[in-house]
Image 1 (spheres, helix red, strand yellow):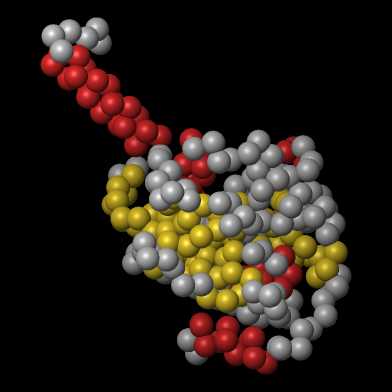
Image 2: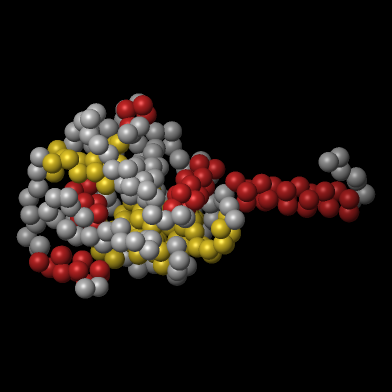
Length: 247
């Protein structure tokens, strides 16, 4: 079955929402976290690029958290559930960072993530899984348990980004992009979209941020190059005025 068809079927067949007992409690110290290897060689670079541009643009508050492949937890019907999205944006944690080194429990240790992202790979990572029974699927966990307002599934090979947003019924609805093929995230006051280009010796599609005026949030290398060009233009203007700049 097509993943989107399966998701649509879930919305239809579970119109009467099932009750789940969700408890927000600290992960036990002896809980064995999954140690799955990163199944996409591009995942660390894609995640690092997302965080870097937020930091440079001063869009990363001191208490914010942008984890990658890191356990986000909840106890559902008495059983601990841990999912590790490829990247997430948590607006604020309310405990010392030393307390969230292993994992993060929303509501207990800070806010619900505003956004979770999964990067597709050659292996089936369950990004579309609507499985309700233990252990629940990622799609179901983000939608029904955590109730993350924004969920994106990105294919680095094609640049396709599927973007879901919680509707009034607390169900994920597939969002259409704007005219620039970007998605507005009100909680972050930023657009998110795919961008083709090169970074860290990788040529391909990346996820990038744009502000509400359509300005691209730069990476550090781009900011350095932009400053270099500014200095060169200024030097050229001084020379045209008969002044030799001191470089």
